[in-house]
Length: 276
Length: 357
Image (cartoon, rainbow over all chains, first blue to last red; front, side, top):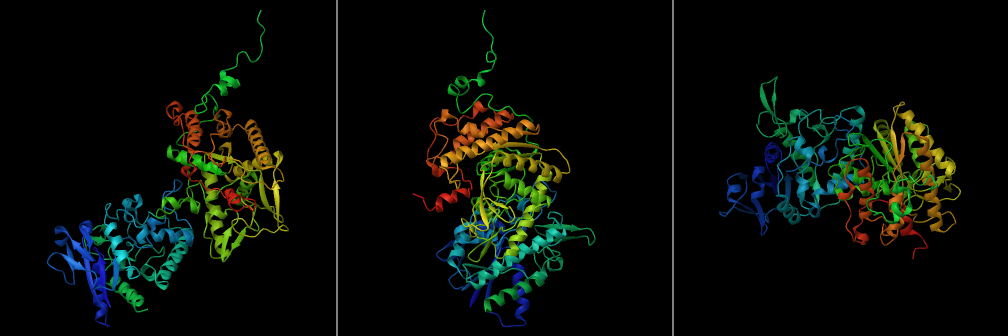
């Protein structure tokens, strides 16, 4: 089995995680492809190959082989690990502020409705809206600028139907805008209930060999609400989007990228699914 | 010497010829004189039968502060909102067709009524029979139905506490009732889910007094929920005819009777309460000057141009819009496929009725 782990900056943690595991067990062949999200629009799929523009070719990292024309053949891979875009548990796709409350209070959402929300990555339903354009995302300063890369990602998903394991990006740190979402005991109960259903749906995608299989971060990585990552699993020194100055430690904290530990946990989860 | 009589000094809108026959039906002068101010800063909540969805849509589009205490998940595509009962009204109660249903909901919010017989089953799924359309795929267990209902009621209670104006469209007098508890349902058990059992369920067709009593109880209960904080209510009567009647009369007769009773009750409530007004959407749609052009091919669905006309009267009277600037096109389309999408469980009766031709 030959695997391609694909994404932008979040590929780094997964790569680090697999490297940690590789010292303990024999792994399938995995190549890692990461490109700055600013250059995602500069990628195309042509004849089952990733074709990189001149600008993209100057801004990507790849552990496999590339030919001289900046083409990366996808046909040599059996499986894609997709480490980009929103995690299924991302609250901005689930909860919206209403005009009665200061912060965002959760709604109890049925499994049928959640299924519709989570189906947004199905090739037939993939639109630019899937990836951006949400005011809540922009307010949270977490998502990318509106992009059109969904078009070729759609092609990628079609090309690898039933062979894509979608892990998305990590849920942001518990220190990331902690007051946006209501954290009352009742709200926590609702988050948990919805998250439980999302986890059921994710498991079903694997069990039913769906077009895209979703792998979620295990609950122990997350805080009580289930959509923020415990800070110890996040990178603390990388300057990037979602950064915050920590007054206590006088350093810039990266609140949106997982660290090696996060990567190794996710790598184990991925391997468990692939072996099953 | 000219004789004097009371009609001499009346304005043009008091006369049928000048008020209706010679008046454009798209901009009827003085058809509604609001009793109280309705502005964009007041918190407005909406509920009622299918037609009320149009009111909600138009208010939102005109930037009124319309409460939505159960907003759709942002990741749910817009075209699926109505399918899951979102964005139809200020909460996910689905269509509230009758005064009894509204009264019952308020009682539940107050905690003085516990509905019975409302967990309906279809195949292996469970439904809230008090709003069966909001979860078209059903839920996995009875417990989930109970949890979702509890959550819903909490949100509706907050809505009642917070609103400044409640807009309610009276739609039907007919409903189906759980005999033992008196719980009424928006649709007959067995149509969308559940099973009809004549020993458990009975037909209920409210008369004038019952409608009036239910509405008065609703006012009193809402007042209690709000701790006495005053609020205003705007009533309308749905111009949409009945899809079917179980009253053993012709559906045309049943429709006219039902609308007459609802209209009378609205007038009575309006005349006895300073905080209740009536907006004549029913009259604007059924204006004989329109020669039934208000309706699509099925003579039931209100055409979007007419909905726009109704709401332009609303916005003009409330000062939000100049109606002369928003006249509909002269030859409106009759294509019922282009009708603005609204959810109407009652229409299911048409689709599944055994006498459908």
